[in-house]
Length: 181
Figure 1 (cartoon, rainbow, N blue to C red):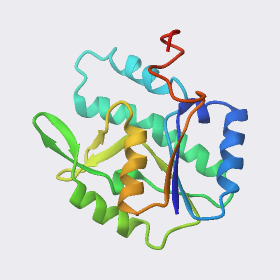
Figure 2: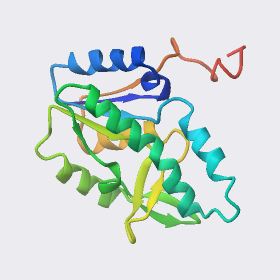
Figure 3: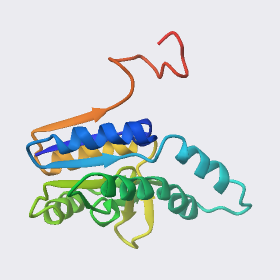
């Protein structure tokens, strides 16, 4: 079993989503696909939400979660035979020093139970989780989809974790932001 993570630009157009479909459907072993929100959506959700006068962290986390939730539903419908899983059901966080951090003991237990039996293709929204004490939506912060993929790969003892991106090679920074990367 392997885990494949696709970022926002990888699921941000019909052409790129067709590439994801081809990559995933060509896998011979079971695969868990973790997806980010469609390119640019998280920033738009944050910008729109911050217009509210008395926006709570809880409300912002819920609003921002819709990017990955919608993206994962779309991708699960595009890939033949894919099953959709909701990461809020198995990635649990707890408040510590004013931040939500992953409760790995609870998360690993729920991941193992939730993916037993392992489907041929599972699609999971990255970035989002839920508070283990009250079920409120939480998030894993920027880069949270990569983190989600790593959590799943570790908990399920995946043979591989692949982070797919539209940037060739390794860069010191995002070349779309820093042209000397």
